[in-house]
Every structure is written in C-alpha cells, then in structure tokens.
Image (cartoon, rainbow, N blue to C red):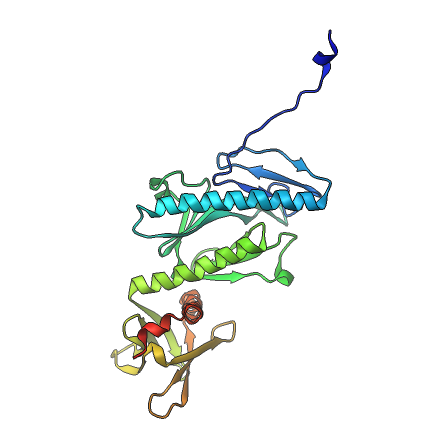
Length: 304
C-alpha cells in the first residue's frame, strides 16, 4: 500500500451558529475545562471538546464565536419581532441548576430563555419560528417575579455569572451564563421588560400593610401615579403623582419605603409599607420598576 493510504484522517463536524452557544464547562457540571471549549448547536449537535494551548488564542476563539452566536440570535429575534405584537427583549442560552434527590450537589441543564412582552419563557430547545414561542416549557409574568444577580461570594459552586428568578408559589430558579456581558444583557432586558409590562398593564394593585399594621391596597396607575386605599371601604389614604416620587429603598427583606415630595412645602414625606408575605415577590418587582424608571427617566413623561 502507498504511504498516502496510512495518512491520518481528520474528522470534520459542522455546528450551525444560529441559536448555538459556546461553553468552557464540562456538560452538566460546574467544572471548567482547562484550555478548551465546546460549541453546542440548537439541535444538540456539538463540535466536541476543542483544546487550545495558548490562552490568548483561546480567548480570541471564545470572543469570535460568542460575537457570532449573539449576533445571529439577535438577528433572529428582530425577524420574529416583525410579526409579534409583544416584542422580544432577549433570547439566549442559560444553564439551570437542578437538584438531584440522591445526590448532595446539583447538575446543570441548558435552557433557552426568552423575554417577550410581559413574560419570561424557558424552552428545552430554541423556538424555530414564531409559533414555537407559544410552546415553552415554563412561563412566568415578569412583574410577579424577583430577579437578582448573585454575588460571587454567594455562588453555590464553581459556576460564575449566576442569577436567581423567584416567583411566589414556585421553586426558585438558579441560573448561570458564560460571561459577565451576557449576565448584564439579561439584567438590562429584564428591567426593560418590567417597565414595558407595567406600562401595558396601566394599573397594578399590591396588597400591603401600613406602618400601623392595617391591610391596604397600593395602586400604581401609569397615568395617575400612586394611591393607597383602605382594604375595607376603599377610601384613599394618600395619593401622589409620579413626579413627586423622589426615591425608594428597602431593607432587603420586607420593608419598602417610598419618598415623596409635598408640592407646597417641598418637604419629603416617607411612606413605609410591608408587603403581604404571599406576594412579597411582587413587591420586590415593584421596587425594581422604580429603579428601571429612574434609570431611563420615564417619570419625565408625568411631570407637569
């Protein structure tokens, strides 16, 4: 036989980058592969593990692949938005921590996440067309959820860039992404979705208790402002315009403070409210609405 017949053959694998993702983690775990990565496609295809000895070359490969996958997914999202009444704010891959009954640690399962209108959607496989957006495995309203970025000191394992989604009546979802930039994209898209959701709702009432211990309803009306009503006779305890809200704060648990400016005296009047435990997550989302609106200066629309 000729010498050419003994030449090694190189295997070739092709993975479409549309709605794909690149990862350095060993699949299903929190362990990073040293000097290597893997690209996984929307249909489960994979490049296999690609080893790169040079750290600079590795970072360049990761950046180029990530830029392409994010760009293609964003293009697909724009195409979907042409026919969607509720616009997509985000689409991309995350990894969800899944606890096992017979093991003391958690595995990770890839989920495709989307923010559409007032909803956060989770898919086992990416939506290939607009109709597939209605076939999600899990769906929540963003204004009923609490979104929180996990500090590095709070990470439960070696996975980095983690965040938590909590909804009243459901288990918390512990999620991770590959880069800090992707986490920031999700956080910004989430705040935008919450603001758009509240504007679409027009009015939302939260059950709270006042500092005196009475149960009341706190209404946020996107056209009128804030109002607190007694639960029994619906009498208004106080009302303020959006332009009068000068700040908000909380203790990280249950106490919410709203700081309003009186129009005549220009003095600040602080209202202390405590959310009912059953809807505490709604109150947390409520405060995030303030942060989002202040950041984007949406309250300027309501100033006289």
